[in-house]
Length: 282
Image (cartoon, rainbow, N blue to C red; front, side):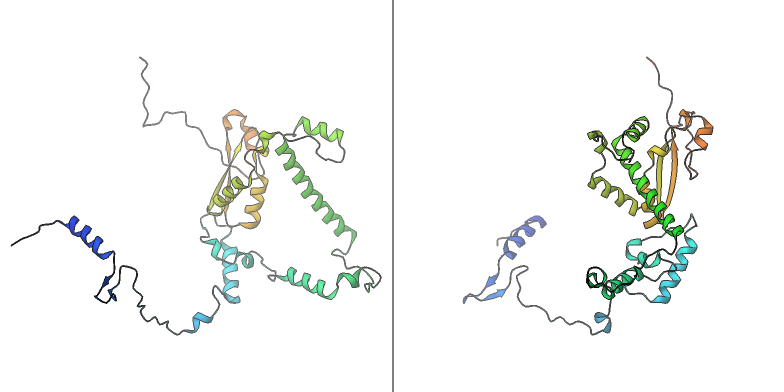
């Protein structure tokens, strides 16, 4: 009598070798299919339900109004955070007092009712142009806001080009229109690529509290206005905290009168840590 003794490892190897091929009879027909090669599919049946034909991620106006009021009530609470913002219709929530899509609808109606051929040219039927302002004061206010936006963009370009301070005054004297004529140094282009900005916005979108570290020697020069504007307009539920670094290098009154938003001052500890002892000198 012949007995074969084998352990679990040998049995597993033999099973893998025998299960790799299909088993056939004398006629060549497959009696047992190989692994993952069985052609007999089971009968699949989907349960009939009306929800398969309905829209997904829909919300009623009542629920939207209640959620908008709840978000507005909790916007000023520093201990409350809004999670999973990407799955919420924030474009509908962040427009209180306005009908969503009203400007787009008005633009389509204006283009359909007043085409270009009937507004300008020899076949024009418009008697008087329709303006967005009713008085000279409104026009002056809008012009001032546009000028402030232009100045802000110009200052940002000057900071990137390194022409701030004394160089800015020299360029202003040369070019009264405020145009930049000096070439940008290559070192100032570091950290401004699209890939780095995408990573920065990924961190902003996935964070609830954002710490903006400023240098106490130049707080306004180390502020990122574009990020502040993005958080203020696109993510008002997030909390932005300004932290003044290197406070011990400037006078206390200068550190207090820094940016417009009250910053947080990190206090350096002069006492040694408990986990570190004095280093012996040989």
